[in-house]
Image 1: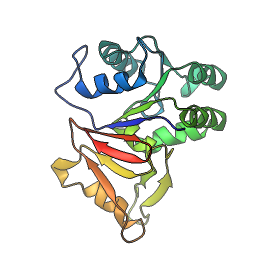
Image 2: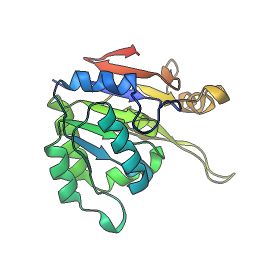
Image 3: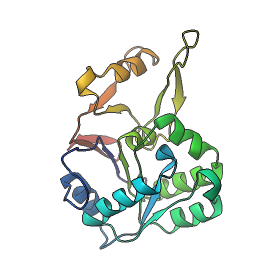
Image 4: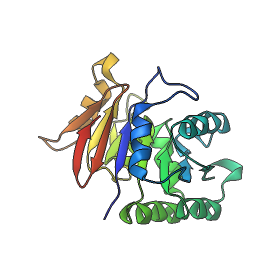
Length: 207
């Protein structure tokens, strides 16, 4: 049975070691004191600065050891990344850029397979911002020049939905662009800043 998935939009009012009710809820669902967390940071090119900040935040809300799965740049070590994923009690997918994050993962298909295996075995997953979109079904590779067109690409699909995060300031323009690339009648979930979707057993709950 697949595990629970939390899609967090991010909360600008929660920084550093402060408590985040959404992360606290996630770690209650993990159901283990000080769980070991595998950190997937491809959306931020495995930025150590971002990792250090997020590790502090995760540990302030219930995580035990947080391990960066090294998948980007000269320090990439897919074998080590897979070992980190295989021994984790929970998986966190960081924010950053969705397309870069998926490109970084797809360069290491064995790691993607390990993530899918852990999810199907019931390991809880949590995404933040771009990481939430990566856990959903798909996103848009934006046109870079006037002659290009926006293109839909697949994400991990552990959350069987399409979504966007913290886009309320621009009227959810990117979510609307995503929906234009999908079949008529497709649904997109708008996750406002400071909120999340909790998905378990195919049921999505706003929290």
